[in-house]
Length: 584
Image (cartoon, rainbow, N blue to C red; front, side, top):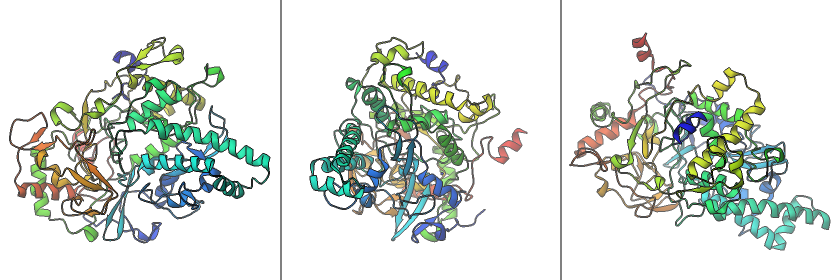
């Protein structure tokens, strides 16, 4: 099975000076937003916040004019509410309708089964991969960071509720019709039919794909299960393939991701276009997986491959954020130096340190940052991600059109089935681009797709530059701050609020504060804060280091605040200058 996957190029799938950071408040949409030096221009930020990745949730005119389920206010006017958590953005030439960060206008140029041609509203990368730290009434913007306020589950249910209320409340529907200029009975009937069709698509996602035994809360989602469910169950029309999303994770930060050998929490992806396209498959990309044959539209999609390539290129030059000392307090450099030595001794075996250890050059001359891969049984963190999917998936009529290695197989592992479907859909879209060999290699990030064998049941341990800005911690956001990451796991806080104010002392969320919008309970399935424990005893089975003194913990926290040591430093693919010089 693994050999077949490698032939398909999906082996790499399995599995954003000592000077202070730049203050660019004059370029921010809100005067209270502090923008750090991450090597992006304002033009970069504006594009990233609203570019289309091809996803289409709701017809654009409906999105602009739909009322909230419980009021006559427009649904879009409340998207900053804690129930949904999006960050508002001012109207501008690049965002004429004043969409919040992470929402874009998408055009479906050619009809895809279930999606008529037209303009739609849909999510894009920044919805989940754009961070804002709240501190003393100010927002510190973290490009490519972790959104700890966006409740994707709540957002989908909010759209679903608004659509259903519009269809069942005559007064709501009449107000929508008036806004859209549908005055005659015929025009109203046509509008109702359109809203009903849109509502089915959204309701399927809200009522099946994002159904879970308990709410994930803001900044967390079981993205992997949602992708697999949507492709193998909803779009394929095989409801028996559904699995419950019991393994919520926080969106990983994006700086150094293109340069890293592996991405995703369980290290199943290398090829950037495969990774980015797979994400769109999970969040409303129009895809036809139910037509009878390719001639009838099977495997057609609204793929935006060149836009996904452009955003990957932007991430290539995204620097990790440096601690803003003029806002959050001065760094004790002596303490940070002691912490650096402790990190090198206790953490660098998994978490690569600058100047990074790199792979050998591949056939394209590219080198990548080595990323630690730690078996779950060793690190001991929550294992629900490896248990969420059902054992097998039914392939149904789709089996006739799969690549030879998988053709006519009635059952496949769900992740394999979903991955193969994604590859077929993406390759159909790639063929339309008619790329040269060089352009194809660029699209795939100069990765050797046929050689990498994905690890199993491991968690990624990436470099820690900028990690200070990405609380809460662990892959499932179950540890509130960096200080608690250095404690024995049994001593960590079991319940705390997500989406609250930033604590610059323990670096993360204040466990005593109630300013957040959602109380996470780490005793629930998928929420465990076990593992990655510093305590006495042999290594493994959740223990990753020795019991630390409080002085050592604070030194390590200070070091993690201090990296990257140079603001705006972008990681090159061929390694840092000093390492390249040594190789030459």
